[in-house]
Amino acid sequence: MSKNILVINCGSSSIKFSLADPLSGKHLLSGLAEKLGSADAALEWKGADSGSKTLGQAGHREALLGIVALLQKLNLSCEGIGHRVVHGGEKFSKSCEVTDESLAALEANSHLAPLHNPVNIQGIEAAREAFPGLPQVMVFDTAFHQTMPRQAYLYALPYELYQQEGIRRYGFHGTSHRYVCTEAAKRLNRPIEELALISAHLGNGCSATAVLGGKSVDTTMGLTPLEGLVMGTRSGDIDPSLHEFLCNTLNLSLSEVSNLLNKESGLLGLSGHSNDMRALLEAEAAGNERAAIAIQVFVYRLAKSIAALTVALGRLDALIFTGGIGENSAPVRQRTLELLPFLHLQPDTEANLQHGRDNQGIITLGTQPCAMVIPTDEEIVIARDTHKLVSGI
Ligand code: ADP
Image 1 (cartoon, rainbow, N blue to C red):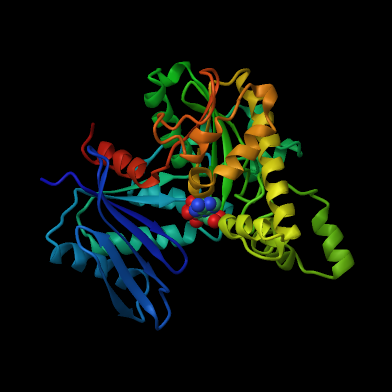
Image 2: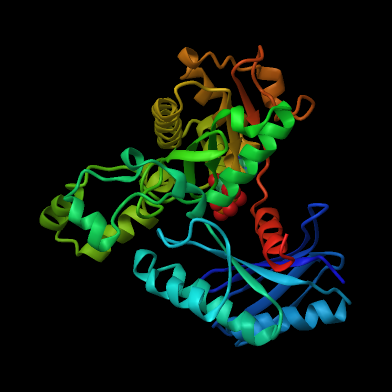
């Protein structure tokens, strides 16, 4: 029987999928169904085969049926399905099988992530119809951070808001932080239980996490993924009074402020040019001052948060860079490390330019502590958790 796992990540108008072998860590087929719900809905895939097809007016259910048909055509099978779910709240501190009860508990959490969880639930329900009889598992972005101590997860708000409404810091990108920290321990050839790590996941969304002995002890994202670092279009931390200020001075509604902070801020807002770090580095080199400002604020805030996270660890063995920017942008890593000399992270410029490729990902001089580049693989974490749960290991 095939041990492959189909990993599904449902967005509001897209489904990313990957057929992965949890034992070897290989991806056999990956693809994207996008523009769902519009007349241009389409499916593309690569790996064991590559191609694309239009899906007509497909929604999530039809797109999943298209993926079933594709797997059948390619003679590929799977033993289970793993779903990426954004918000597990306090109910889910680890991955769990999809059952009527767990789905109901997830639904009860939806108010914590109204943009994401309902879409994830829709994907799970559609997958139950498209793949009847196949076991399914939910893997949460938040679960890894459920080990944070209360001084890290509580906001200084009336305590009743935490007790009655669940208002606290949850953190996100958990599967990515978990993956790169496990990988760092392997590469450093040390048990993860002994290590004090900080992982910086820098993609369109950005977060950094302090991981002590393999457990998340603090992270930069909060109740929602808006808190913390500067991101592609998200502001990260701001003065909480800004909402009222903008409503009063610019006559914006709350949803307009929310849109501004989530979609028009961050690198895009500061530069007025792009949310894409590659484009900003090119623009900076061509003399674009606003691009330079955006990168400067991004790097400063990142370094400041890394320094703050060391408080949760008491020491540091390794700083890990991952995500599209963390894995590919030598200048961002170099500039970040240059702001942190007191952490004794001395950049090795040559190794950094090579993304640490010939040195287990290590991009600093000396041995202790080190900074590393480790490509993330959230799908493999989801495939492995799913395999463990469906095969009862
Ligand atoms: P997502 O969070 O959507 O998964 P990614 O992890 O793919 O996003 O990261 C996207 C970011 O990575 C973009 O800002 C992009 O500019 C950046 N990026 C990718 N390659 C490079 C590169 N070579 N240099 C600088 N930034 C890069």
